[in-house]
Image (cartoon, rainbow, N blue to C red; front, side, top):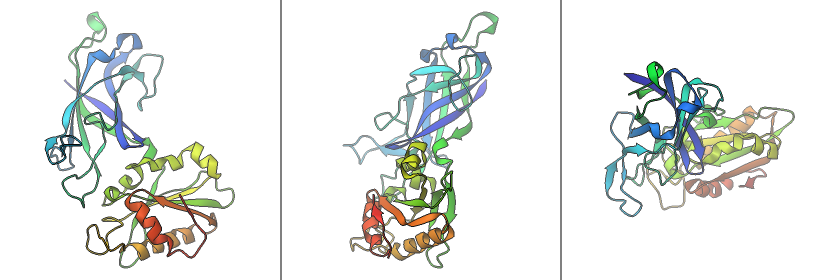
Length: 305
């Protein structure tokens, strides 16, 4: 019989990973009944059109592509709440923890287009099948042979604080994600982050979750700045696009003026709560290039991060 599960995503230094699965059990289950060895987890990473993602076989064999599918080990199993928080009492939710990171096959929640230098990363559809390989409990109350293969939802909590917008530039509007500090007690600084080449495209959350940009919204980071706005623009191609639609070698960007327009517009919209003397800008890789390219176009005091 088919059963439901939920996916839990965490944003790490290497991007978003599916770190936990939450299984919907037919009855409440106690911690004493559970062990990691009772579960087998198989996953296929798919594109939104249903095709299985193909990624390089290894870091060295980058020209050999293989389907992204396989088994993931389980390191812990315990009763939980819906979003994976452990509980001491019996629960109808059981969370499975799995190791994740670059070395763990099929643990990433996104995939890069390694077949094109001008390609982008995108969130994928993670199709899991969890099989119960040993009984939970004994006697008439035992649970046997359960299969969990219907995803009831994906919980990616660190992207939730971000709101979305788009500039009104007449020729080149730019989408952006942004965060508003929880307390607007006085003017706050503005942190601008410019994504790398792979985080461009049409999947806006990639711009702030392809790397650990979400950390700027965490309480400990907000406390350092006394509360701060966070602005993360996303370009359609890459910041090094000089008009060709591809990586350019001219050192110019077609987005320079449009990016300045967006930031001016954003700051004007929040002019009563953003401190124009505390504007911080930085980026990684392609975004680092754009930081230096764009900084000359901004006639105001700024800091590079």
